[in-house]
Amino acid sequence: MALNGKIAVVTGAAMGIGKAITEILMQNGAKVALLDVNKTAGDSLKEALDKQYGQEKTMFLCCNVESEEQIKAAFQKTAETFGKIDILCNNAGMLNESTWEKTISINLVGVIRGTYLALEHMSKLSGGQGGVIINTASMAGLGPLPSCPVYTATKHGVVGFTRAMAAASTASGYGIRFNSLCPSFVQTDLFTTTKSNLGQFSNLADMTQLIIDKLGMLNMSEVAESVLELVTDETKNGEALLVMPKRKQYMTFPSII
Picture 1 (cartoon, rainbow, N blue to C red):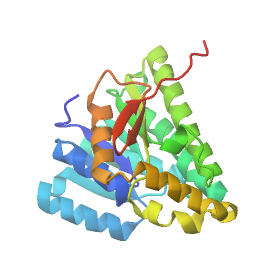
Picture 2: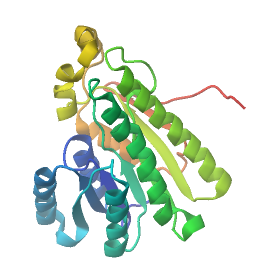
Picture 3: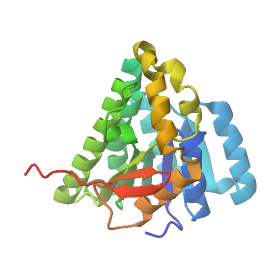
C-alpha cells in the first residue's frame, strides 16, 4: 500500500507516539488530520509540519475521543477537506489507575467509538474505498503489568477488538485491514508520569522499574516504523505486533474455532 495520496487520521497526534506516527506517514506521502485534546501542542505541530510540507497537507482538529459528537465531526471535516479517509490510527491513550474509568473510556471505548465512526467513511459497504485501521495497544495487551491492572485490561481489550474486527471485515467485505501495535516501554510523557499514576498499586512501581531495566526503552521512531509496516504491508490483517528494543514479533494465538 503506497501512501502517496492517502488520507490518514491520527488520534492523540500532537505528542509522543502520535506525533511520530504523523511524521512518518507524512514522510511517506500521506496527508494527515491531527486529532488531539491539546490545542497548544496540536497547533504547534501543525505549524511545524506546514513549514516542511505545506499547509494543504495537514489539518489539526481539537478533539476528545470520549466525545462521539467531536469524533464524528472531525471525521466529517477530514472527509470534506481531503475527499476521503484511507487510514485511521486510534492512538490516543492514558495510564492512570486512580481514574480507572476514564482510562477505560479513552483507551478502549475511544478505540471502539473511533473505529465504528470511521467505518461510515471507510467501509466498502457504506461507499468507502476501504483502507487500514491501526490501534495502539501495548505489551500490556499481551501479558499482565502488575502495577497497572486496568491499563492492562484496556490494552487486552484493544488487541481482542482489533482481531475480531479484522475477522468481521474479512467475512463481511469491509475492505479494511485491522492491526494492533503492542510496544514495550516507550520514552513518552505518558511513561514519565507513570509512577505518580499507579494509585493503589504505587507500591509495585519498583517491580515495573525492574522490567524496564531488563527490557530497555523504545524510542518513538522505532514505534512509528512498525506502524508504517502495519499500514503498508497488505498481507497484515488481524495482527498484534509486539515491538521491543531488541526484537519485533507477530504474535500467535490459540485457535478457538
